[in-house]
Image (tube, rainbow, N blue to C red; front, top):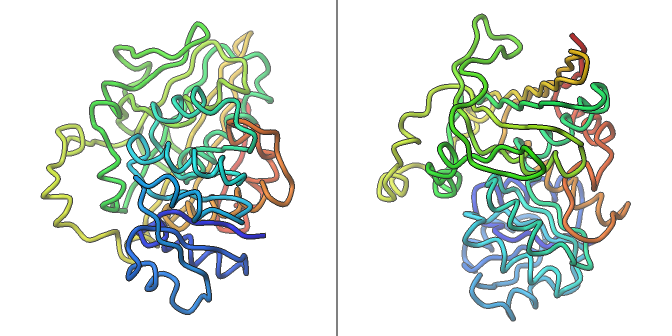
Length: 336
């Protein structure tokens, strides 16, 4: 098994390099800067291949011989499609770490007929939320409404994440699924949310979360929307590029270790039945590397049908969440 890692010298990419090396999976590291790639590969024995995102032939050559491609280089709305095209041309399965809701829908539309398996949104937000959403829906029966709420605290964003965030799309441009399609909408269904472990309800805003683009593809649901816990006035106003460039590339080890994330999914079934599922973890960037590498490994080892797949269409949700339990991720489904 050989996995090509695009964006290997970036912040999340280097964490994925470490995860591949830890698991003993052969890899080829792909990026545009040979010096940074050599630094990322140091001590691993991994091959490096230089390819610019704007050179399709070079990208295809970089992925040649790989069984799967993991893409950690965003913003994906601008940089993702060429990598998918090159992976498909090379005959390699594809996984990425995007959290960009609109882009995820575009991938489903543009690459539906691909001959390989394409699974976007395998990060700490999109992957676990889609998997727990499927299990919640199974327990709830026919789902009338589903809400997913995400809460980050005690952490910090990387420069790459901040560059990928489009505040207009993330907040006002958030999509809600209803009447068999996705649409923008006005006020969210909630202004606070009760997260596990929180002493009081947490203020939430409507947000363009990945599972709203993926869960309705495998769960019959009347309406689904996403909420983001906390206050994000700085993000909503937009952060100037010069300010982002002045920040550290990403949070240091101590900040990442103490950071926490919680995903809470609630489904209301017919007859008033309500089921909740929750996934909690720490160190979201490291968990993203674990999730993406495991997803690529499973596509190669176990296979999945071709085309674009939501996480729960590509992988057994309970098995994948069970795997994450071995990495300190807690999850459960309860009926109220």
